[in-house]
Length: 220
Image 1 (spheres, rainbow, N blue to C red):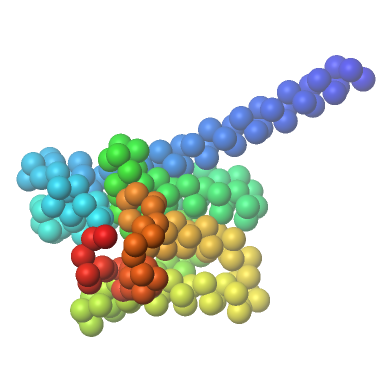
Image 2: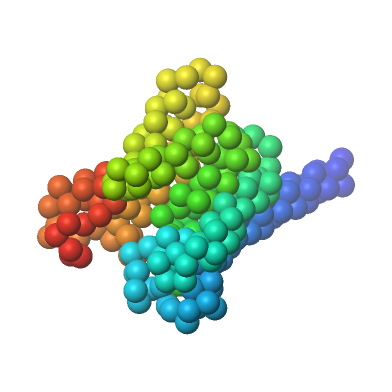
């Protein structure tokens, strides 16, 4: 009996350890600074210096052109998809890995906390779990770009994704992973790289950052 208990406890510890390692891998995969590496390799530009609020595929496009943009976007989408493959069974595990890969992308330790906005790894997460959500998240910024309001278009698509998970019984199972990707995306829009609230900034500034992903009055 004692051997059985010990063996069972050892098995649980091994399972927990394996889960923690996979979760750490999802964060580190998300943190890989593909945009920074591409911009440095092609044009020698440090995106943190020229585009500090978002070290992303868009920044790589501005600094290095279309080909690096396509490569970086593909790699960043792959980050999210790989995280879903690392997740264990069940929505809780998927939500954990989704949150970690997006958080790693948004606040990369390899960039001293800088990073992207989380849209591309979120598309990858959704491709691995909810392809219709991936289409929605991709379509929002694209439509917003045509209207010259990319940030607003992205936010609208994120609200639609959340609404669908809340209101549709068919999509209710996707709610945990939906919330898991939206929280770090919205936190990045509101708080930037430092994850810090400034008491001297009015609430309207934070609302503007969330909805439009911009700061019309400049940095606080």
